[in-house]
Image 1 (cartoon, rainbow, N blue to C red):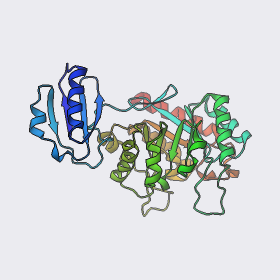
Image 2 (image 1 turned 90 degrees about the vertical axis):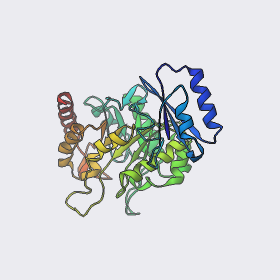
Image 3 (image 1 turned 180 degrees about the horizontal axis):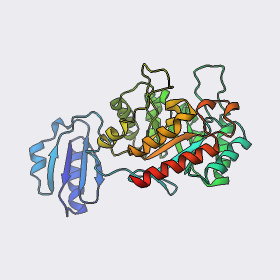
Image 4 (image 1 turned 30 degrees about the vertical axis):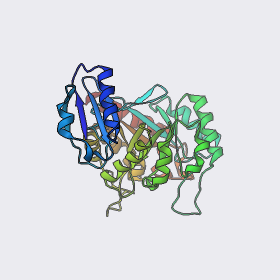
Length: 332
């Protein structure tokens, strides 16, 4: 249920209604927009007298929300959420490119790539320290050493860092990480999501391999239910019957997400296609469709990469993609 307060309502009046609602046994999410304040009632709202609430002098409208996700719902929060990462903003018209290698392999590799991409369009640096791999025999990442190298690259370039978490027990290691990524395989790791909801970290939540948008938003709801509202959604392709690309990039998810939630959405064309030469057209298409950003894999030597070399761009190719995306955004 949501209650929209009238313009000109004082802080004291709003707090009085909020206290009354909480005494009815529900939590209240307050969203203060430019022109109105929206109260989102979360919990068992059956005991709330809708007519009584609507009759209050300061209340403009009351309506019930049928969707199971509440906090991430745009009805609860009409204005776009803008995620501020040390001055770098995503959402609400702010566009950023997150770039870097699939996995951190060495100091020279990571710092070299970081120095290149920060000059040509990347706002944030990505790199995997803990790597989930389909085969137990594949490179699993440098783990804590990889996190240390990411922090070193951040000091060198000034770019905030993004890296994936595999286990809630690893959270103490992520103290200096700016954005914690939840990968596709962990999208419905609800115990992990609950723990991340207790943190003050920005969470980048990737869509699962074959999950619906509703399931994706419910995973974001898990994080927000814990108190953490700093979430970026990432469309990375879903598994379909098509095998020519690694996954099928669902660009239609962008306008759907924009309609359903206030959270920003970025697109990962690298994991979606699995083929480097398809990254540029899909990145351009994602930008044209209204995405708030991109996540692109970049490696200084893709043919010898320890992870996902086939989908990685060289720094020069990345510069070309970033330039093309900027041209498209300037038009739309």
